[in-house]
Image 1: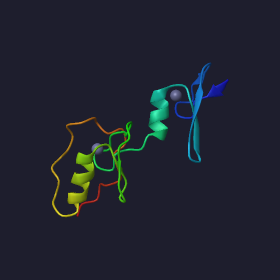
Image 2: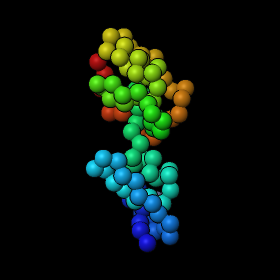
Image 3: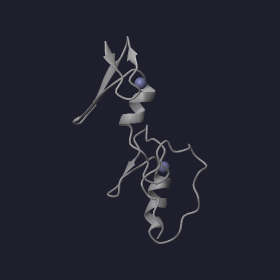
Length: 95
Ligand SMILES: [Zn+2]
Ligand SMILES: [Zn+2]
């Protein structure tokens, strides 16, 4: 029996996910997503699909990638109409 790397649950049925050199044991997909899924650099939601990868990072959709690209010039409006971010990107500093 294995223990979930995220919640520590000693579950009878666990599975492992390997991506590159990152590997984890989980009791649920929720936990797997929590640890393995990248967060959108713009809105912070988990990228569960293919996402959009740029030089800056990965985004959940083209809209976010474009918004993030324009962010360096103009101040973005609050974008909270999607999923509440589980862990927002480390972008709390004001310019
Ligand atoms: Zn778990
Ligand atoms: Zn996004």
